Image (cartoon, rainbow, N blue to C red):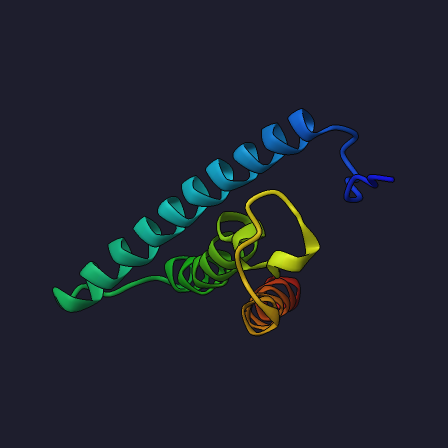
Length: 112
């Protein structure tokens, strides 16, 4: 008897759609936050003064890069293959690293 792997989204098609949206959103969020960090870093390198708002945005954007890249963009790629999730290609070490950076980023954003 064949048992399909557990999926909380209902069907393989829905899982594919959700995964693509998750990775696209994670990539765009990582790109946007990276641009904020690089913009403020360029001002600092050129000797211009930054205001508190810009420094706060650098902190939040740095944490957002961690969450967006490790949790959303890399998402299922870091999950162990044995789980049979869509595009799962990792192992327990990559899953643990993803969990560490995800919790670090979420907690940092929460505290900020």
